[in-house]
Length: 105
Image (tube, rainbow, N blue to C red; front, side, top):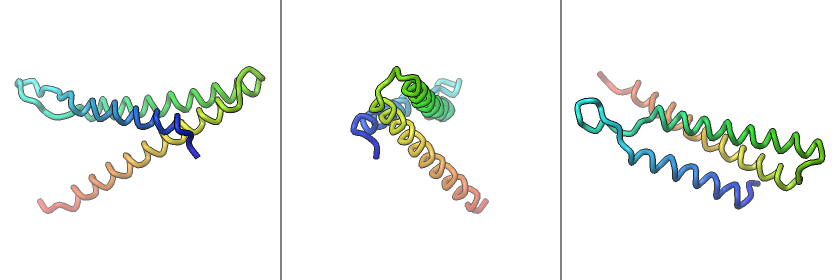
């Protein structure tokens, strides 16, 4: 079960992603084209990757006796929460794509 700190970090990451949607990119003609989905997706992937690296580093440190087990559990919970959020977003993107494919031309 994720700790309150892990949940708070996950919510903070989602809030940052939400703020990015407010920063619209220009389409080159001076008109707003919409949120930069590629940048949002890249940041989400980087966040999940960083959480995984952090949990790996903490696990290695505890194996060498240089870290506290609570830090490892917290890092693993944060990593798990990040992966669950990413999988949820992936499922929504796939569902939206399938819905677009079902639309009549």
